[in-house]
Image (tube, rainbow, N blue to C red; front, side, top):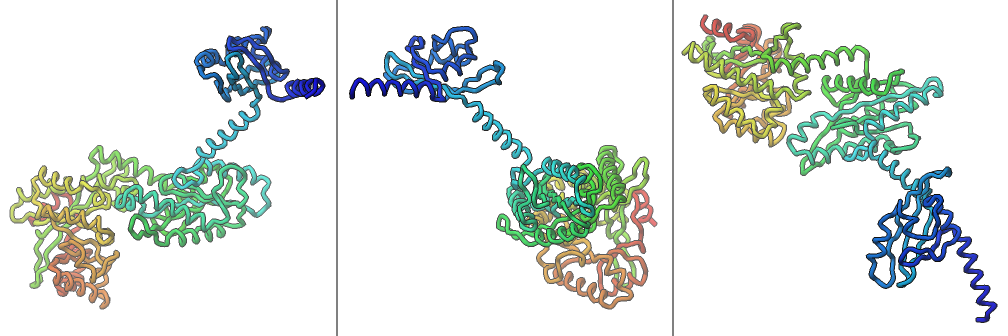
Length: 577
């Protein structure tokens, strides 16, 4: 290569170093800077203020003091000492900057450093991170649906957009809750419950196509589906012309979600109850509240249905909340008490045995409201998880009263005590141990205790039946309550571990006038007798009804004909008369 070519190449190199957008500098291992291009000087000037740009370590002393140590510790003849080291440059009037510093050892006498302005990239990364964190904060981690916060934001945006909405358009909030989901969790475990929730979320998405659960940006579809907690989901529908359009969507959701699921080796049916609130100038929290109130009304009506919110529901919801709060206090302050309805033996000669047994029934004496009817608080106790505590109280109190009657009344004392079981008690794995403790502490004989379970619960699944077998192992007898109103049948009666069948009052009340109902009672008695079970006719109110069930060979009877439920002293008097 000629001298002219060498000169041209050198000038090209200088032009490259001068124009390159990356800062380049060369320094000795002791830090003395030998070479620096203009971009490097421009980037480093804010770091040194009025000081000279002649020493590498002095320049970076305030922002990268570890640099000298890294160079001294690098023993290799050449290689990368530091790469992509972030340097925060203070604001000198043009805004703070972020530099990226890389240092390489060329040989024993030379270090090469490169600097680049990564301010824009850093801000971009920060914005992406903030967006991801924001999306995560608004996303349910289990179903990957939006969460409650995202629903509130969407409702607020709809309210803002509503000022520009064409006349005749509105929006609705659908609040959904899975019916009997707690039982799935109790029976199959939380992982199975989570799996079911994911499947329910997928069904919701299928009904509401196109996609309804994007996070960030405008919801173009006019729909948003979200999981707002536990087994609760919310659907927001915008751009509707009438509330009936929301009801139509609710109907499709109920149908789709109500189809069977295969979870953890079990076939499960999971229905939903839906409350609908029409957007009517309320705040987002108020809309969710009203839709949730309507959902509870749907549950109380039997579930697997939708209910449109009405203002009168707020008052009922407030009363339910008051009852829940007061019921918790009632358990602490002994406001609950037990009454007993006699169960009499029906003899073929027309006589009755008044001491055959009693059924324990919970009552509540409120300090302000007076007597609160069971139908007002039992359902609420089940919803809020207090039914187990209520049931345990009834069992213990009834056992104490029964033992006292046996001591005071002798042969006139009841021979059997019947106590109702709740789902919460039967799904508690250690509840048989609780019963054993109560029997021991009260001195109650297990053979004189009859625990009653509704047929819909007894026939539900193997886990409940397993718990019933555990109770029978204690020597307790079991009764199937309200037979004829649930899921079992005469053909499957032999599969249930019960000793007594209680025929529901709806059959007994029509036994005088309906041949059909008499035939059903007779069939139940004959099947029970063939299985070695006793029968009790519930709700007997007239002598004619008593004669019918006696003639059909029912073993025992219970109802207002014989006595209303009585307090413990009144029952003693009734037995002694």
